[in-house]
Length: 452
Ligand code: PLP
Image (cartoon, rainbow, N blue to C red; front, side, top):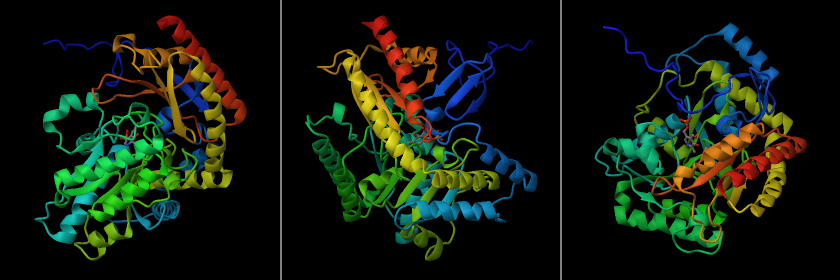
């Protein structure tokens, strides 16, 4: 029988109607395709390439490390790069988040956090503990593996898998622009969103709830959305009151992106567990981590069984750990976290000029993690019909101007919302921000001409 050949596209990821420029190389904030066209990487891939492309110091380090060792399994050996990386992350993380469980990416990090929370209660209270539910939010993204997707609140991503997902409770996001309570200020929305957690815990019964997970600044589900400080203060108190672990998903926001080492530092609280990835190695190799506080670590590893029943082959890959360490060293030495704060403020002030366009509904973010939401009608906040494909138009029109932005969004009904994420490398300069802004404005102008 002849083999039924699929269309020529062998990479099982792509949108068949999309043109994918072939990238030859990158340098700093720029990418160059094989025809020599230059693009500003305005979203660092997906908030990954935080120190930019083509970093020679990282390349030299990687070469030397690869020449030294290919792989060792964490269950049998250790390597200096693993020890140094874990120590540095523990130093970067707030409070007593001192214990680093290595994984290979963001979904593994949140999935690990979920299992860690469950095992914490099993070790503490015995195997019959009823604490297993993880409360999460609509308009959130925690990854695509089954546990992570069960916590994710983007309906469109969940739909095909609904019957096989874990039925975790969901509450509303601190999404002020579309808040369900009719709040007029972000402060009020933040308070209502925190109260919604307490109500849900009581509805579920605190004895059944193991953890609450939240992004500190929302990524792809509603880019740039964030609460006021009061939200995290209340959430921390509520979690403590009902004996529930607080997991903060820093996969996109961590490692300097928002102008702090971890975004949760904006809110002056310490969670029990942080999940992170992306900017941890800035894309030079895949790696992620789940960072536990002393309480969680000691309960499982010191006073408990001493064995977290989990693990992936590439956990603690020596090269990835080495690169993550190197990247953190560079970020510290070059002051890139401070740069993200400074340039983020500059970029945000410039972006606010875009409110003059009738399709720009909301601009929000922290540091260099900024989202723009587009609407058909500013007064009613009515979004464009999905058939218009607004966010894809913005993406394509910006690309024609030499700027890469990341389309996001997906609200409760799974179809509403056209957002883009602006998240350039955190070593970007003012001049480069001006260039980014000009290209984006032209992309928006062209989109207005097409749809209005
Ligand atoms: N959590 C957040 C907040 C994310 O933004 C992402 C990815 O965008 C993930 C989890 C999943 O990470 P990964 O794609 O590395 O599995």
